[in-house]
Image 1 (tube, rainbow, N blue to C red):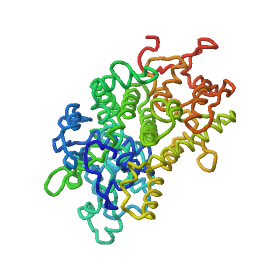
Image 2: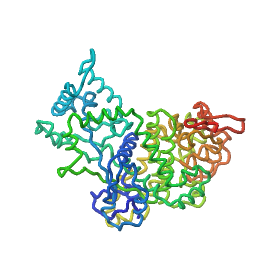
Image 3: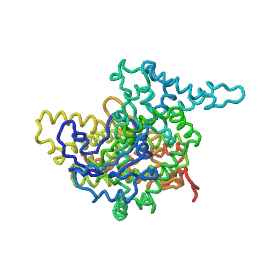
Length: 556
């Protein structure tokens, strides 16, 4: 059985149990196929900034992560089935802020009359003389429209959704809100006022923020709680030294990651956050009270799921990469885009790394896989290198087979031994589609990591955005490495095989004979892309450097 973190009972065999699917039992609760990369990042940050409780103890000082001592005590501090040993968080709904920002930009048929009434009421409150003082020729309504347009400019994911299900770019704490779903069918024609309408917003359905970000957050917690000696042994076992002394020490990385994420949340001027808070609670404090607190005036908490305890290596790499992106001196919007890519790539890495632990391969295939247990063979984007193109296609099939076989490992499948065979087949078909190899394909194609989007011949490629992410996350800000070291870092962090030697070796993992002759130019496209991106320094025909110039003095 997969050991969950935080430790909890997973033995409920009811079909409606949250952990019934084999995909959830193997990979954690849960990576769903319909959650987008922006939603993954938003949910991760939502858990981080929200008031939290762990093992029924409140986390003070609005810390982004529980204290390390508390995280480490989970290892031996609870018994199997202890329902109190969960991480809970209390997200804010921010309905008024969303209403003012997104109602005017939403579809007409999604605007319920009570929503319009509240919108008009908030405007009336805003333009009152005691609320707003205008100078010169400025009219109160013009000021409001300007502020409305300002917050529409922060629109993030969900432009085609109902206004309450949309989200802001997470550039400030005050712009991050939980998911709210308007239950139009239940409301029907029974709702006549905003106070009645508030009861028909659901805040716990998790349709768009569907636990993927929660799982990523738990992976970070699970990685950071590891002993320093465990991390040291793991780092020494890697083929390339990819972490510095601070990154190799969990307590130092904990501080670095916390400071980095705090800087992301301070990307906006402080005035924007204060204005957002005023629009949400200053004009109508009752709505925030009713949506964020229950009838007993206690915070409305949501419980996180769990991640596999054994997934800490890929979680630790994720923490390092997130920290490096946060400390790079780049545009705040670009940083968010790169963090979204990091979340999506972590989903792909988690699926393959965890699946590799639950499949059996030959000694040669295992040796070819490297530290992560799998290989992704990258072909040139134009597909001109025919041999590598075919190898990459076979590799995509091998990756899908890896995830497919892992879900059917006896340690997972024995859980369903008492069920009818036809029923088990339906359960597995659903798991393959929602949490298994089809999830892998869906996420990879959205990223542009697998092409074509439709049709046969799927293969791994890199585009400009992915390459930029790989440079900034595998090389520390302001530092440089040799080109050969960069290729080794790609393999150590993500299992990427890009040159003749790594691609030839990868054939063993994919189930074919090793190739020794690929022409010697399988990675020529990568050199050209790095050069075009301005991060390649050619010292000679035989030696080049790859640099991450976004932080500090490059010559240092």
